[in-house]
Length: 336
Image (cartoon, rainbow, N blue to C red):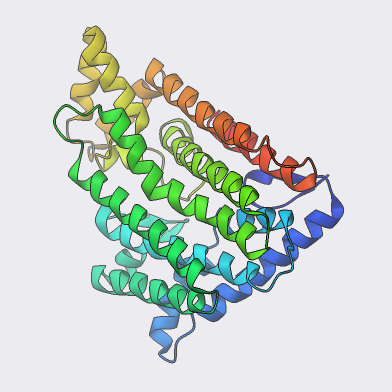
């Protein structure tokens, strides 16, 4: 058994494992090339998160989805570079919005160089992604533009919050569909498209990616509460400290409103207090880790992962499909 990609994904087919590894190596080289500038400072800032590593989840999905056509087609690796550059660019912007100090175990770009440089570096990465896209054809440009619109819409909806009368959980899941699901779906779509796979296969993999992307983010929400060392390099409870209401918190508030239990209401009150205080933050984490809301968030994660798995049913059996199924299991495993 060999291991490749994020979460220790097991690939039991040696030919597939070798091809995926070669593809990811080519993507890494493409990322470094795409983030070079004639201005050394821009290169340093643009490669800051590239060199910090990461799961390369989206490029992996491009490589696996391309197995349903010609995986060696010339557009496969560049499209994987595009989705990862886009993802990296959003991280620069997210860290400014969230005032994050750490990303992937290193100082965030905004901490190191300030907000203006971080925002402009994200813009630089978007520009480089667009440059590569132009060589992949108008359909690729259209697909990426639609995904980027959804991504930004999701971010705006998150910032604006749910409208009056809208269920906060439904609103949050819509936000995740835009912020995370859209780009993961495009990763699968690009892999299949660029490999020349049948349009039916492209649609199946796009649906799979959408659901897997939401499951992936929900697993992150659970890990932010439940883990001792966050996989993204963030400190556990970072979202909590920053006042970001992720799914475990939303499930808690939903339960408090429905049942009115004193302990639930007290925990909601604690979460609404100043959690930059270390003692309050530690107490909030302790209580949430033991609360049924965390279990409900885990079940939500499993549901989306199972929907992703079910979406794969029409695809022919084989090593690539097995690897995609195993990613569903890996996401659930991350959430405990």
